[in-house]
View 1 (tube, rainbow, N blue to C red):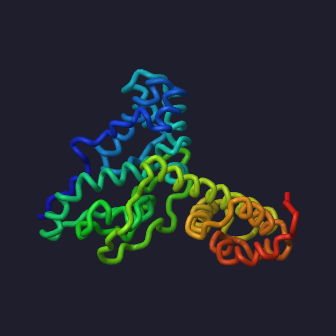
View 2 (cartoon, rainbow, N blue to C red; view 1 turned 90 degrees about the horizontal axis):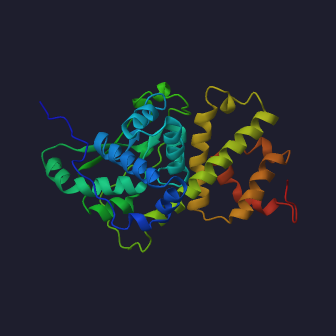
View 3 (tube, rainbow, N blue to C red; view 1 turned 180 degrees about the vertical axis):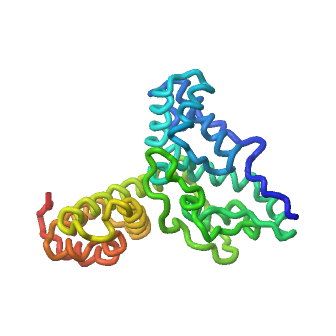
Length: 302
């Protein structure tokens, strides 16, 4: 009988520059030392429970953390919200599935386990990660270890596996995968000069803008085509999550000008012809060039 996989860490690294980090400084400025304590407690729970993420149960965990710290539940709620708003945790995953994680948490976790997991892989045991919450790229994994033979990506996704419907203010419980299946071993030939915080800032900013754009499309579709199947109340949030992934690629990979993007987005949903053709994030990305070319000059499309 195979031994159960142990996902938690016995200890976790804490960057010596944590108090110089812009996000931490802002959190401390807003909530004092209490805010930093709550943040460290949350990342400790991530590493202790699942290794690189935490399923946050709004109906229970705010009260439990308040009891552990002696703070009021309202204060704990406010600090957790600030941690998410300041990108200490990934905003999209928290909004859509009450998942607390970040690229930094995931990278440090897989760096910590990589050596031991290579030995386990030689014995036929692998570590699996749900695709829909993985924030790391092929290059990230290559930097961690050039031979990530110990890692496999689960066919299922975390949201459906954990049945997050019991989480009070939960949104979508499923969605398209955020990363593609890793293909073979890929060596990374570039070196990053940015800090983890800067990388997370860029990634999260794209995701935030993409999610807001997807929400805007859904809202406009409900106005001009209220019977459209993708905006029915029971699946609207799932559609928004799916569309935001395509829009995030438009912003991050295609590197479109953001001011142009905002004008194109409004135009796509106010022009009588295009509003019937741009009904998803994928269509917006596919037709972006044509939309930009047809954008009326000096027209802000307010």
